[in-house]
Image 1: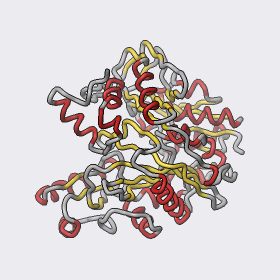
Image 2 (image 1 turned 180 degrees about the vertical axis):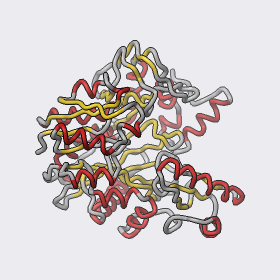
Image 3 (image 1 turned 90 degrees about the vertical axis):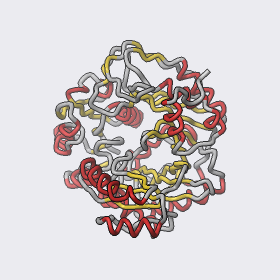
Length: 457
């Protein structure tokens, strides 16, 4: 087992890894930017190293800075969390060269699955259902027009190295294709340094379903069931839950087995998430693989009892999976709300000083956060300041428990997304489980007209 792990991240995920390490008896090293000097992950780590100024490119995204911190502190492993360098094949390669264990998949696997076009081909070869689309990057308007004619509208243009909705355009009119292709290529180049894009058939109003997997270095791979992440704004998840009301036991078993076989086919190790679109006819289509721990991993931890972060560490240390597929059982229902420092009406960021902070506990309530009273939420990073996760005997109890928790939460000094979450939780379609990735589109349209989702009561 490792003696010391450096966490190449900040905020709540850095604290989450520190908690797992403490329980495993492993020392930790926090890295931080100048803006995060007083953050809780710095306070609770055994050691800390400042790696640069506030700008992410000069600190949390700097491979030389992260590796230097690991070397001077004697860390024998690096946990990248999510975001920042978590899916950097380059960091994984440099760690390998420096004899520091990267807690994640092998560099070649990260590179393969990080290229969306190559990942599609690999999944198709492994028998995973994929959407009809281009076999690789689309580099000309003529090629794009031919593929669009063959697929039929609507189609979607996606960045090969993309994520988070950047480099993505939906085409419903042939006249939109030329401009959208160029715009998507420019966005992809600016966001990821690679302007390549590909085209897929677009599914109207799908659900977003993802399967959590764990694989060790001894050939064992298991899945931990699915999470539903259909509540999104601009392809950014707002609320996640598990299990999905749309997935039957038969569907779970069939797709779960397919995902495990696909993970084995690409020699996947550590934690990962296979994401899918589910159409209204019950058909699943591969979307992407996230080669890291997910923001929403606590949902799965609640319903399975598996500590995913501890398993990540054990797997990276060469240990065998502590679970077989037959050991994995599902209990109750879990919901996670991402609490963002933003105006719930305009979605404008709301950084600043939190003057009062209190989140109630109670049965089945978990809070992952880095904020506290009188702390400063900096303007330089993602706006998520906390995750509130609840567990209930069934979905109805989980919804009631989440509403109760949010209603009793006190965060003063900044605006947060809590009012929006309360409206979502009270909406009749949400309560009935009638979800799709276009759920928030209706909220935004109705909000402009003075309505919005059903008011929270």
